Length: 440
Image 1 (tube, rainbow, N blue to C red):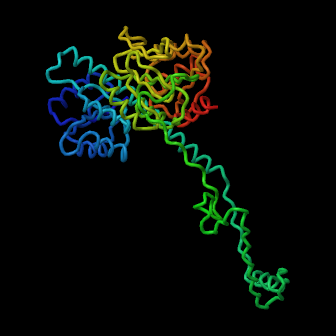
Image 2 (image 1 turned 120 degrees about the vertical axis):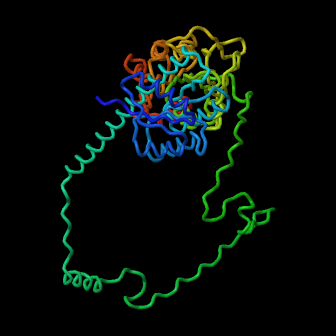
Image 3 (image 1 turned 90 degrees about the vertical axis):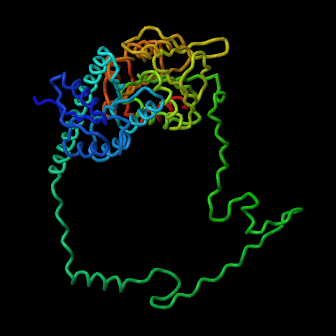
């Protein structure tokens, strides 16, 4: 089998050489080409048609974000972003993920120790393996869909065209129609129709002790004008998205877990939830520190619900979304005033911190709540054990994203295979389903 071909894009010749060496440590990959900026990246992606690409964020002439947008519009392929650890880089990386980048990895520095560079190389190769396998699956599904469509088209026999009626027949039919009696309208056929008599204007009676309202002032009187549907009363202004808005007394709670492909999936999910959602939403997204703060800001702008990077001891309120900060487990707890967030830096669970399993398990003791567990796109199996414990404790909903909409059908597959999810839905249907179950 031929090696997978990767395009490396970075404005530093040194970094291009480092990344090339890291990739080609695995004989399954070869670097098919290199580019120094976004303009060269767009051209090379079209010319080389690689299986995957690594893309730097900051480059001259055209940066990584603009190059990604152009590539996804013209020649979509799995793109792994190389990102620095600054707040600005974190924000740009989240934007790239929401524009369709497959994943990201921390960019090694020239001063990085050999052990750190080796770790980055191992993670890069793991992500590349997953990315190219997913691309192969998508290509295979597209070919199968095209073949099925072609077979279905070939199976339908062509319908014979109805012959046009001869001109003589058409003329005879038109003559018959001309002889037919006219519709009863009070006038003889062929006679000019008399104009309709004018109706007298209705007489307006004055109610006792009150002046009649002239017709032109009906709208001003609070009634709809004739011919117009009654207008609905205006909606009350939406509640503010501030930290104090939303009730601490709620019956429903939603917990969401995701990893690779999560930022884009979460954006769609949060945007689809209603502003009057009577439940808080707790989210674990596998992501390192600093990046979750940028993700929370972007999700907050995506819909009507307030989105926070969670803080230890923070009160939990209906209609708010709480995102576990990178490097911290997040649990649901309760004090004398209501439910609160608890954060910890305990050892990683299922290989992750934050861990979806930790979040789900923290909901198990709170059986009085109507709990809804959701598992979205992601690599691995984090969340499968916790979701099963949540289901066994009486959760109202356990929902997995279906393979058709997942970037990586790993975490949802694990939940489906162990029997912990009672509902499987495409991403576009999950927000509506949650709204129905919480509001119904």
